[in-house]
Length: 410
Image (cartoon, rainbow, N blue to C red; front, side, top):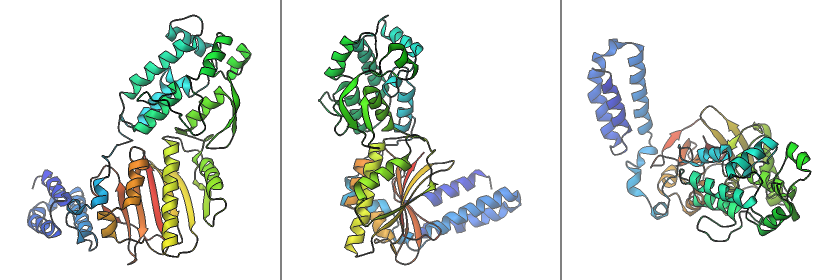
């Protein structure tokens, strides 16, 4: 039996359109052919084992209650969006990396720190004296050219556009963050630039000493929405903008979430567990931090709703942020809940309004979403609530306590 037949068998067993009975028939009909090839060695034995494992998976009693999940999609699923892959070549992650490395756009999320960088900007603007309008025009052209090559959500496009131009991608006047009406096109910066010729609005490092200026000073200090730190200069605004898309050691999700919890849940009965060994500060990730926090908030609200509805103890929630070779996982673990309040069949076929809103408004285009849970019968499964697969598959996992919501980045 040629080896490629095993691939064919495996593909048949993976086909969602055939029933469990048909899978068993396929396996039995293949058995005689498999016996003929048993002298092929360990590699063949391993492939047979893999096929057997797939059959075991599809024969799990709770899973096979639904032979074809796509045929029983309920109304809440109809409104789910088309999957936007944030990890594709033209997805969010690569877009943010490209933005961060673009020779022009890079200095809208970094300060201009040296004379060499300054001279390079003058050269690209085609002038020997700094002109803010020429610089802004080059920035806007570079952004349009870059964004047209990537498939990102309109929220990200609008935020960056408002930061660079004061208008969203459709041309409507817009703020790019709460209480943030300062942007590269602000009239105040334009007037300042005319009065301070040959100085960029966002100098830093050695350049501040050379030009004897810290750049444009804000009319009044603005507090960072992530850290509450006061921002006094446009250079601070530029660094803050970068922090909205780049998690790293000096802008760690650990500190961002701790600050968020203090502001929003400090006076509640919710107890958060954050251990640095499980919530690593050194992980670097390009993503939409604001959307991540919005998604986090909605999941906490879902936990609170379950606690209230079923009269459970105040939630004990452990947070972790870890990296492995395949992914970076932000895990929200509701520990002190005895079991997940839906059956596997229900969560696979009727995802519900709360999850639909979460996926549509925060998760899609940001990350993938998984649920690890103990169910009422004591069994534990992982369910892919939102990823590139069209169906919500369920996989048995080792026993866990409570419910875990996993936001997965790659």
